[in-house]
Length: 262
Image (cartoon, helix red, strand yellow):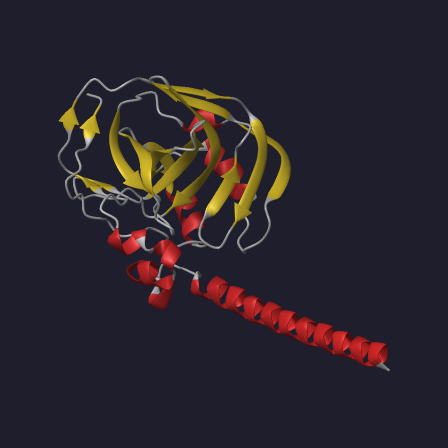
């Protein structure tokens, strides 16, 4: 009888412990779902840029950071900045509408060398109007080429796009298959050469900034190419039909200096 009572006690204790574990699992699951919901962000309304810093603790830098991007470049100091060495090669087109922008995967496209630093290109994406301004003027669009070095430091090259009569051949290729709704990345049987996007004039502005989207992480090396590239008015309208405004407001420069290569 003693062994029987002991067995019943053990079974009861195990059952109670399992119930507690199951309850904890459900609690953790509900917390995760709530956190995921809290981290949703957008470019307007209650989840727009002015609210990013309060949507999640992970986004605190969006409100409290002192080296945020984008900025308005008005004054700059000319200095001997290193040349930009773009070493890109053609890659298959992989394009995605992620709900915030149109993004092209490019982790096999090659590298950017800036002085002694070498950065691997990860992806490039677009904003309209441009994120960032020069002398108080935003461009019609901007393309951000996102790179990362061996120490995981990011370098973003901002390529300004100005609408006019001349279409951009590579943009034409991208827009022909641009997904108009949010979904998984789509791989297409076509090669793209990112070199076609780059201007002949490689002069640039340089400053220490951040990601322009949550979590607004600082320590990003920003390289803003001075010479804009042309897209057609039709190409701009095609993009605006999908994303009419996906640009963060300009941020305070604070005590930062903007450097200029010439």
